Image (tube, rainbow, N blue to C red; front, side, top):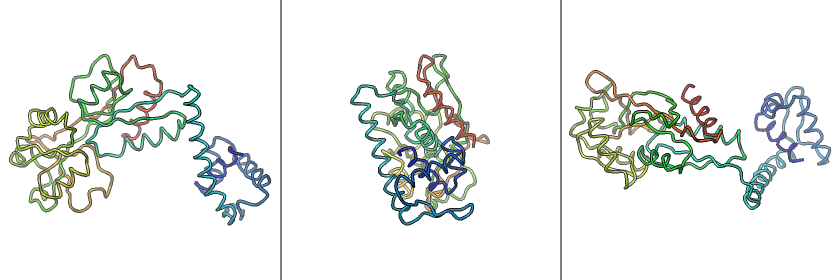
Length: 294
């Protein structure tokens, strides 16, 4: 009955027998027969069929909502029991760049966990150097990070994208009217960075010596705090990745960053050790690369 319930949930969620059959990797006639068998076992109709369309019966709507909770509880029980039995499957440990604001990583995480529901995924947040050291010490299996070092032959170095760096600045700041801004034009303005306490000095040095921001450095623990500082007019923030549409509101403007006449570009990559034997590392990396190519 559990499998039949999952078929039923897919049909309702997708609103289509054919799409549900494709997702569940069975034929349309087979998924229809399975739901009919479920209805016979329950003793009442779940769906009212109208030619090529269907509607949930009142009993079907109630059963659908309760079945979602039941299946979620069942899957959690299986995971916990597997751990108690000492047979837990491999866990994929992924490092994520703390200051990155694009949605590609989270879309990849959603696809991966949906495809491999029995494989737990742990996400570790850090700045560039924190993620690098986690990878060196085998505390994570792979890292989504920006490139600040030459590629090492000990790692698989997959470039995901090379993008122009932007800054985020309060919309009321006169600079927000520019179509681009240079590093030199920001020399007297504080630079807001998202960093842990341990990495503040390293981050400040990188943005000063490599990127060229000469002004004061202000620090925030997370993106929400950093953007609050931006909106308050405390300074500007280097923007990593493209934020989700609408997430900046009307109080913040993103502007491309230039050094002279050339845009400042940044490579974003996923790294894992060549000796890493977990097939899931490469699988996750492939899914993540696909999100950047969309």
